[in-house]
Length: 259
Image (cartoon, rainbow, N blue to C red; front, side, top):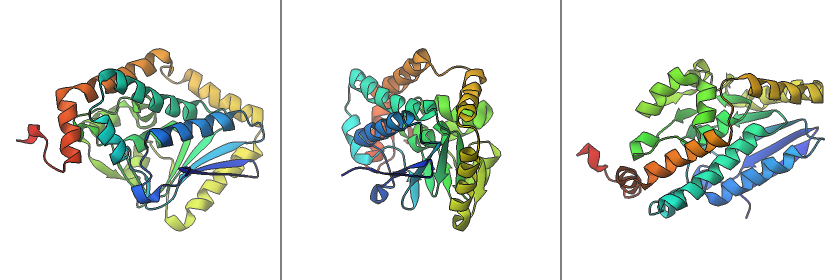
């Protein structure tokens, strides 16, 4: 059964995460589906913009627990391959030629932050919580970092990468991770305002403007940077402390660095 629901109406293509029972956490299969969906829509000239949405109380809770259990004993080589697939999926979202909007209806944690940050725009409900929780598990948000740091800036990333604090939608707005914060009853209306603006604009100009921003803003997300981030997460996942952090989480106990 597919983890995604996909529809197109009036030039607006909607890709919806549909695993509410696991808070839309992703695994290798979901990652492959998302990558395929964004690669496919990139070839469709009739699509003017893409909305990334989700069902249920959470937008995306990061990595699926069963996937984490499988990863817990991965070798470094296996971690490199695994992280490489996540990196390719995020890059497919970021590189999508059509503008992309994250419709955030609920909480966003860990890897889910990468999905929001890889989109061009984000609209969040006011009740959503955000968290980059990796250091609590002895890990680092390496693979998502090029997108999240672009979205929130290095200063905010220093705080939230290092403390793993949970923060609310208003703070996500203040630091630039999301563009609009609204109540749940007007979420779809605000997303529709943005999609209508995009559909009304020149298709070629919109695509060119998106590329302009990406070409001009800071460092290019190129093969070297992607390889660097993939190696970063593979190294720390394979380390003793990384393994201890993940195992303690899965076993619902304190990691050994907490005594």
